[in-house]
Image 1 (cartoon, helix red, strand yellow):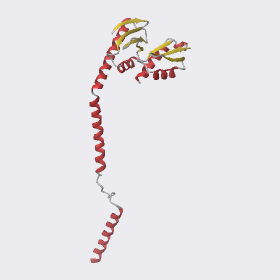
Image 2: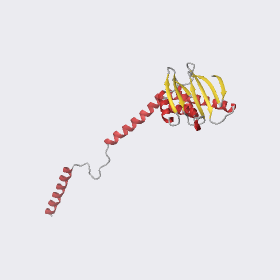
Image 3: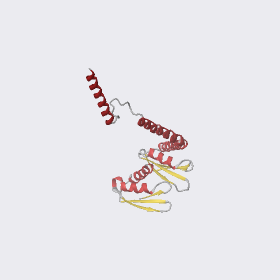
Image 4: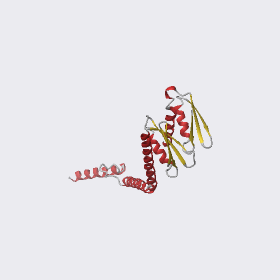
Length: 66
Length: 145
């Protein structure tokens, strides 16, 4: 599963902080391109498969406001 | 704002970033975090795509309502930000004035000591001299008698 965060909207710092909080639920890897910060999520817990990506995106947005 | 798409319990719409400051968008997103899943994207320059996904299964009407509420909240936040910017100088003036008056009060309190009924501020040497004088007066008056 891949999530592409636009650099115009999202800060890398917030994404890294969110990965730190969620890393016990799945394997995360991060790549940076000129326009996007790409996060790939693998080995997601079966129970959380449907919601993990969405919850992760919400948490990044929460950190942006913070 | 144009291009509204509804798919998989998600409503997608696009608006221009020029009309709304980024801080207002973050503020609005923060309000909706409890009710919906949010994702923001900007594929075209100066345009933001918003993906609003219901945490529960929502009908088309409910998704449209969610979008309308989002846009209302966005307007509210934008207005708040413009007012905040406009009133910045006045707020700074009021706060600085309040702090200045507190400092003035502290300084005046330091200068004006409360009345010293127990003569605590009188030096020990002066107190001693006074005692000696009063004792000598008493002795002289007794002698005269």
